[in-house]
Length: 119
Image 1 (tube, rainbow, N blue to C red):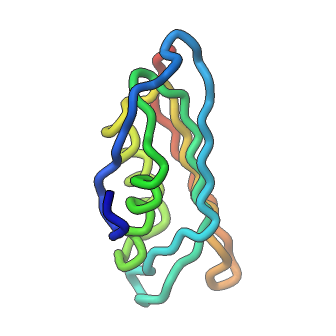
Image 2: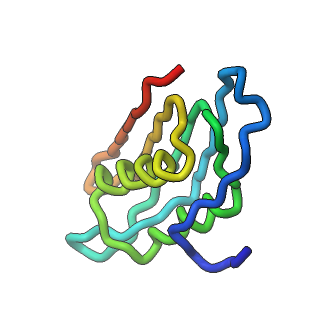
Image 3: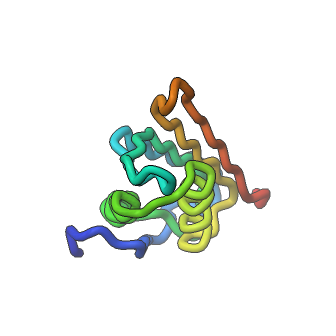
């Protein structure tokens, strides 16, 4: 597997498909670029999902999150894109992606995206 940023999420079979359980990932060093100023935006991204048939491989998730470092996008778009990418890769039963963006102009932003209803 490469160590260069990539949008490709690798997967592996869920080892316990007959049980609902939660997987949580937290990336406290997420960065992207403000599309208005070009300055970096810093965030903690938390992904919490209940897998169905597939799980996300951790290193590929790291590389996918790194791929946003040079991309300009508003907080809402970034958080929704991360959710969409995970849903496209593993079709989880449920997922919540939270972006906790650091102070910019005296305001912090939290974006919470949920998807999925299968159980």
